[in-house]
Every structure is written in C-alpha cells, then in structure tokens.
Length: 432
Image (tube, rainbow, N blue to C red; front, side):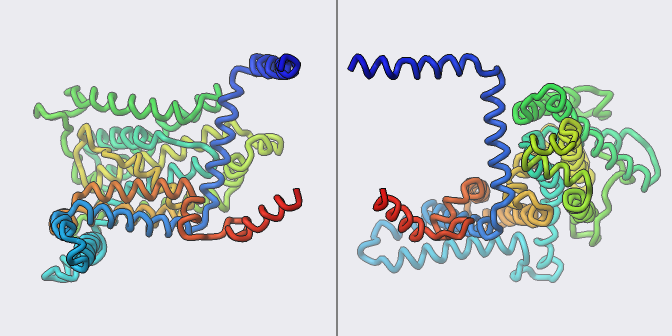
C-alpha cells in the first residue's frame, strides 16, 4: 500500500502543479469552447427534431390539461368501475382545449362573420412580429458562436429610442415613422455594441455582459419613466405620452384588425438575414467564427471586428423588434412594455435552428400559442400557463436532441441505429 501511494503521489502533485501553472482564463476559455460546440450542434439539428419536439410538448401539455381538469378528476375517482368514462372525458377535454387554441390562433370556424373567422391568424402575426425580429437578432449570434442573452435589454432600448422620437417630435408622416424606426435600430445596436466591444477588446464573456445589460436597461427605463422631460405627461402613472399618429405603423386590413406593417418589416428582415449569412462576405466570416474562431483568425478574419459586428447587428434587429412592438400595437412606453419578448426570442431562435426561415416559422408558432392561449383559457378554463409549459418543453427538447431520438427511436446523425450500436458494442466486448 505504501508503494502504491508513493506511485500515485507524484501524479497528483503533477496535476496540482499543472493546474496552478495554467493561465488565469483557461477555465473560461474551455467553457467558451464548449459553448461554441453546443451552438454548432444546435444549428445543425434536423428540422425533424424540431417538429417532434413540438409534438412531444403538445403531448405533455395534454397530460397536464387532463390532470388539472376537475371533470377528469371526478371520473378518475371511479376509474376501475368505468374506465371508459375517464378516457372519453380526457379525450374530450384535450380536444376542446387544443381546438380552442387552434381557433384562437389560426381560424375560428365558429365565428359569426368571415372577418371574425380570419382575425385569429392576424392576431398571431401581430404577436409574432417582435418575436421574429428579435429571434433573428439572437440567431445571428448563435450562428456566429455567441450566446446573446441581451435581447431583452436591446428591445427595451429600441422601445425607448423609438418611443421618445415618436411622441417628442413633430414631423411629416413618412419621415416621422422612418426616424422612429431608425431610432429603435440605433438603440438596440448601441446596447448590443456595448457587449460586442467589451468582448472584442477585453475578451469579456458575452453571456454575463448581456445579462447584466438586461438589468441595467430595465432600471434605466424605470428611472426615465419618473422624469418629466422624458414622459412629457401630467399623469402620475409610470408611462409616457402616446406616440403621434404620424409615427405609428399603419394597419394592413383596416378597422377590426390589428395587423400592421411590422409584418412586412419582419419578412424583409428575414430575407436580409438570409442574404447576410448565406451570400455576403461578412456572413461567411461570421459562420467561420462560429465553426472555429482560431481557424478563422488563421485564415485572416478579423475576429475582434466581426465579434463586435455580430452583437451590433443582432442588437439592431432586437431594437427594431421593440420599435415595431411599440409603434404597431402599444403606442405608449411603460415599465413592462417588453414583457418577456427578449427571452422568448431565444426560444424562437433555438426552435428555428438559427436559420432565417426556421426562425420566422418558429416566431409564428409562438405568436399562435400566445394568441390562441387567450381563447383556450376563456372557453375551456384551461390555464394559459399551459402555453408556458409548452414553450419550456420545446426548449428542453431542442437543447437535448438525443432525448428526442431516444423517445422516437431515431438513428443518430451518423446513421447508426440503437440496435446497430448495441451490436457493435457487443462485438467490441467479445473481441476484448
């Protein structure tokens, strides 16, 4: 035993000395390397995994609806006497809940008029506009190997700049709207640029910096709403004056519909991000950094400059999302105007696999869940929190593709099925 301890002791001391001699930022650099790898894996996930994640989330939501419904609980009390009552009631409850969700998000076939029937899809697009724009900004960071968690703060700054220009200036219609939108873009770009420059110049971790900037933006807005020169209103409520009519996004279908020109901005931004990432030189450099920053640096890419640009462009898109949200539907700046859009945008980018079209469709899906959840709760009594559960399960499954493959017995990306891997493992054990 003493000889064995003597043999192992030098190894342990060598390990300790190597750990002590490692550079101060070695652990952080290793964590960032793992982050780059995780983001690459998420961006390369098959669309089938995303679709199946939604299916599993709906199944989990259905189970929760069954468990929370009082009528189902009543039939469960005599399950062994008449099990058919339990299963029939459970099916009806889930059917009614998801039917209401669909009617509130896509098409309401029970509405008395055609206008009321097609209004749900327009409401879905209204909710989807800021999610799509902010999701595109987050997706650019993911494709470039950076985890931008600062969408919430960038949206708040976009709202702040766009709103102040919207109600504090008196300009012609076209110029006023354009200037307010540019203000939203500028506000988000500045807030994202702070994190980008800090990472590029000092190597600061963008996750920590953007999270802190979220809090700073939140308290900055709370402070501004207490300043008379900013709110320009005599109300004691923490809210600003409404933006002028000349600065509002025009509606597309007239009275009775809230859908505004923000959806056009969302479509244009989707095409822009596709062109930027797939057809431009800058996009190639950003994707190269996302794949391997060291190799990109060796190939002559200015990694520091590209890193700053990623967060500036991403922040600009998030700021545009905040501006569209304010100028299209809210019209006043309030403390909670951003809601959870910035955090939901992260989910949208993950579900869309950080691709422009996927992010657009994911934004529409989440907008539909939000729009349909209201009608689902009103007509069936199903808590709207079920929508949050659906979103959370989707994120969980998107972040863990092997779990989805295990649930549906799918082969791995290399094409090997579970049974084949088992046979190969057994063959290796026999050979050993």
